[in-house]
Length: 330
Image 1 (cartoon, rainbow, N blue to C red):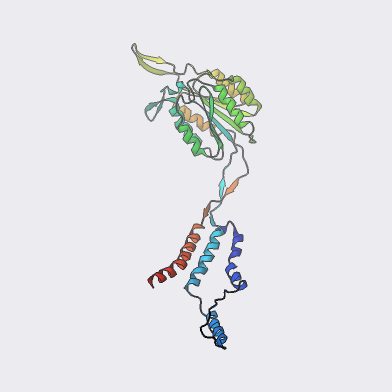
Image 2: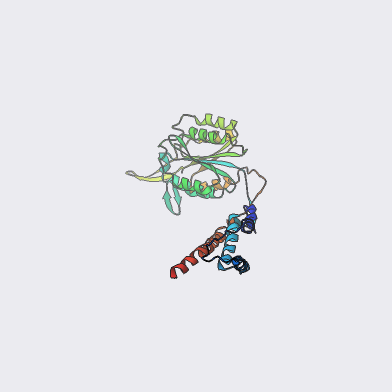
């Protein structure tokens, strides 16, 4: 359906007619070379003849130009069909480890061996795109924690900034406690009752000013639920001077601390040893305590005013240009 954003402007449509009735016509004074006593009779007859003369082409161009100009000023717009927006009402913060150990290539995607951060981007990107109705934020941490994206409904921007993250961007070490502390700071004053932090790391807390256990205790007080993900394979075959050797590339992963953080805040701890397990974890996270809200309706709006405005300007240009062209030719 078509509606007007400023319908009261349509009251200006009869304005030219009102002005024509109210404002007297300008008098054209000419001095006669010969004064004739009954000259006024000729003048009145000529004026009467002009008064009943049919409107010229300028009139028929100016009228629609004015009508279209007023209609454009009222801002016509097309209202589409109502769309029901699904809202889960969740504030979700992602905290991603960018420490040096995330460059360990112990994940396989599409038959190729990739590092842990690439696997995280591959799986988390799809997870972010499915977060319709949730506000999402992004924290990147290494030696310190940095807020890359505040809470927003703009999932595309969050995914783009995650894809642009690079290993070592925030330092080589791992400040898990600081990442939790920053999430608390950004989420504690939010009115939403469903506040979730998903923390992904492949190591132990080796930097920062806050101990992870202390940060988890503060998170529990403000109602922040933390889900922790320990990423990294537990077996990997490498070649050396002494032949093939099986090592544990996740030997620095402190699972006990990550479990304690999740348990103390009412969350869960997940272990992702490969890309398939990581994808399954994010599918489980899709189902985290949704909070139902009253559904909201959204009507897409498309502005239509450029069309009548363009036609009005074209007609007005013709009204001004045609006499100039005629005068130039004569």
